[in-house]
Image (cartoon, rainbow, N blue to C red; front, side, top):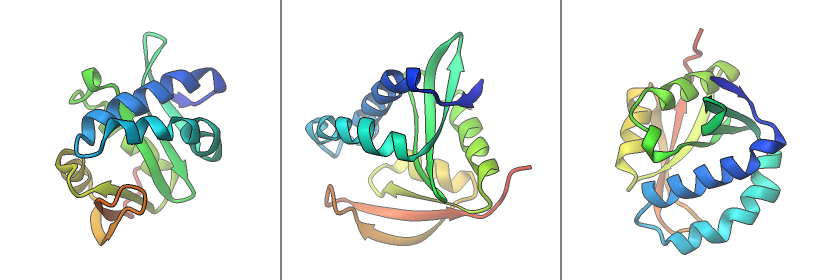
Length: 144
Protein backbone atom coordinates (compact mmCIF):
# COMPACT_ATOMS: atom_id res chain seq x y z
CA UNK A 1 0.00 0.00 0.00
CA UNK A 2 1.26 3.47 -0.88
CA UNK A 3 0.55 6.21 1.63
CA UNK A 4 1.82 9.63 2.62
CA UNK A 5 4.93 9.72 4.74
CA UNK A 6 4.69 10.70 8.39
CA UNK A 7 7.46 11.52 10.86
CA UNK A 8 7.33 8.07 12.46
CA UNK A 9 8.56 6.64 9.11
CA UNK A 10 11.83 8.59 9.21
CA UNK A 11 14.16 5.88 10.55
CA UNK A 12 12.73 3.28 8.15
CA UNK A 13 13.11 5.66 5.19
CA UNK A 14 16.70 6.49 6.15
CA UNK A 15 17.57 2.81 6.55
CA UNK A 16 16.04 1.92 3.17
CA UNK A 17 17.79 4.85 1.51
CA UNK A 18 21.19 3.92 2.96
CA UNK A 19 21.01 0.16 2.32
CA UNK A 20 19.71 0.64 -1.23
CA UNK A 21 22.16 3.44 -2.04
CA UNK A 22 25.16 1.35 -1.02
CA UNK A 23 23.92 -1.65 -3.02
CA UNK A 24 22.90 0.25 -6.18
CA UNK A 25 25.93 2.52 -6.21
CA UNK A 26 28.79 0.14 -5.49
CA UNK A 27 31.02 2.43 -7.56
CA UNK A 28 30.76 5.05 -4.77
CA UNK A 29 32.21 4.47 -1.30
CA UNK A 30 29.73 3.50 1.42
CA UNK A 31 31.42 6.20 3.52
CA UNK A 32 30.02 8.82 1.13
CA UNK A 33 26.45 7.59 1.71
CA UNK A 34 26.98 7.40 5.45
CA UNK A 35 28.16 11.02 5.43
CA UNK A 36 24.87 12.02 3.75
CA UNK A 37 22.50 10.53 6.37
CA UNK A 38 22.17 13.70 8.46
CA UNK A 39 21.46 15.80 5.34
CA UNK A 40 18.78 13.30 4.36
CA UNK A 41 17.33 13.45 7.89
CA UNK A 42 17.42 17.21 8.36
CA UNK A 43 17.25 18.72 4.87
CA UNK A 44 16.14 16.48 2.01
CA UNK A 45 13.33 14.46 3.58
CA UNK A 46 11.73 17.48 5.32
CA UNK A 47 11.89 19.54 2.09
CA UNK A 48 10.28 16.81 -0.04
CA UNK A 49 6.85 15.35 -0.59
CA UNK A 50 7.38 11.72 0.44
CA UNK A 51 5.25 8.61 -0.02
CA UNK A 52 6.01 5.19 1.44
CA UNK A 53 5.15 1.65 0.39
CA UNK A 54 4.00 -0.46 3.30
CA UNK A 55 3.57 -4.24 3.55
CA UNK A 56 2.11 -5.66 6.78
CA UNK A 57 2.76 -2.36 8.60
CA UNK A 58 6.44 -2.36 7.52
CA UNK A 59 7.78 0.42 5.29
CA UNK A 60 9.72 -1.36 2.52
CA UNK A 61 10.14 1.48 0.02
CA UNK A 62 9.56 5.15 -0.62
CA UNK A 63 9.86 7.95 -3.09
CA UNK A 64 10.44 11.66 -2.62
CA UNK A 65 9.40 14.52 -4.88
CA UNK A 66 10.95 17.95 -4.79
CA UNK A 67 9.06 20.25 -7.15
CA UNK A 68 9.00 18.30 -10.46
CA UNK A 69 12.00 16.16 -9.54
CA UNK A 70 11.87 12.56 -8.44
CA UNK A 71 14.56 13.14 -5.84
CA UNK A 72 14.55 9.56 -4.55
CA UNK A 73 12.93 6.21 -5.13
CA UNK A 74 14.23 3.29 -3.10
CA UNK A 75 13.15 -0.18 -2.02
CA UNK A 76 14.71 -2.61 0.39
CA UNK A 77 16.76 -4.90 -1.88
CA UNK A 78 14.81 -7.99 -0.80
CA UNK A 79 11.60 -6.38 -2.18
CA UNK A 80 13.05 -5.42 -5.55
CA UNK A 81 11.87 -7.07 -8.77
CA UNK A 82 8.31 -7.53 -7.47
CA UNK A 83 6.65 -4.62 -9.29
CA UNK A 84 6.74 -2.34 -6.25
CA UNK A 85 9.17 0.09 -7.86
CA UNK A 86 6.86 0.39 -10.86
CA UNK A 87 3.92 1.08 -8.54
CA UNK A 88 5.88 3.77 -6.70
CA UNK A 89 6.99 5.34 -9.97
CA UNK A 90 3.46 5.34 -11.40
CA UNK A 91 2.21 6.94 -8.20
CA UNK A 92 4.90 9.62 -8.50
CA UNK A 93 3.95 10.23 -12.15
CA UNK A 94 0.33 10.69 -11.07
CA UNK A 95 1.44 13.55 -8.80
CA UNK A 96 3.11 15.62 -11.53
CA UNK A 97 2.45 16.27 -15.23
CA UNK A 98 6.22 16.34 -15.88
CA UNK A 99 8.73 14.39 -13.84
CA UNK A 100 12.53 14.77 -13.96
CA UNK A 101 15.16 12.63 -12.31
CA UNK A 102 18.89 12.07 -12.21
CA UNK A 103 20.48 8.62 -12.33
CA UNK A 104 24.13 7.65 -12.33
CA UNK A 105 25.30 6.37 -15.70
CA UNK A 106 27.01 3.46 -13.90
CA UNK A 107 23.71 2.45 -12.26
CA UNK A 108 22.68 0.47 -15.32
CA UNK A 109 19.77 -1.38 -13.69
CA UNK A 110 18.03 1.84 -12.60
CA UNK A 111 18.81 3.56 -15.89
CA UNK A 112 17.24 0.66 -17.84
CA UNK A 113 14.24 0.66 -15.48
CA UNK A 114 13.58 4.35 -16.13
CA UNK A 115 13.91 3.87 -19.90
CA UNK A 116 11.40 1.01 -19.72
CA UNK A 117 8.99 3.30 -17.84
CA UNK A 118 8.96 5.99 -20.53
CA UNK A 119 11.76 8.29 -19.40
CA UNK A 120 14.19 9.76 -21.92
CA UNK A 121 17.67 11.19 -21.41
CA UNK A 122 17.83 14.96 -21.85
CA UNK A 123 21.39 15.60 -20.62
CA UNK A 124 24.53 14.06 -19.17
CA UNK A 125 26.69 15.77 -16.56
CA UNK A 126 29.07 15.17 -13.67
CA UNK A 127 27.45 14.94 -10.25
CA UNK A 128 29.17 17.68 -8.26
CA UNK A 129 29.08 15.63 -5.03
CA UNK A 130 30.61 12.38 -6.33
CA UNK A 131 32.32 13.27 -9.60
CA UNK A 132 30.45 10.44 -11.37
CA UNK A 133 28.54 10.89 -14.61
CA UNK A 134 24.78 11.06 -14.34
CA UNK A 135 21.90 11.38 -16.74
CA UNK A 136 19.00 13.78 -16.35
CA UNK A 137 15.86 12.05 -17.57
CA UNK A 138 12.31 13.28 -18.11
CA UNK A 139 8.88 11.77 -18.43
CA UNK A 140 5.88 13.81 -19.45
CA UNK A 141 3.41 10.97 -19.61
CA UNK A 142 0.86 11.44 -16.88
CA UNK A 143 -0.52 8.17 -15.46
CA UNK A 144 -4.30 8.10 -15.31
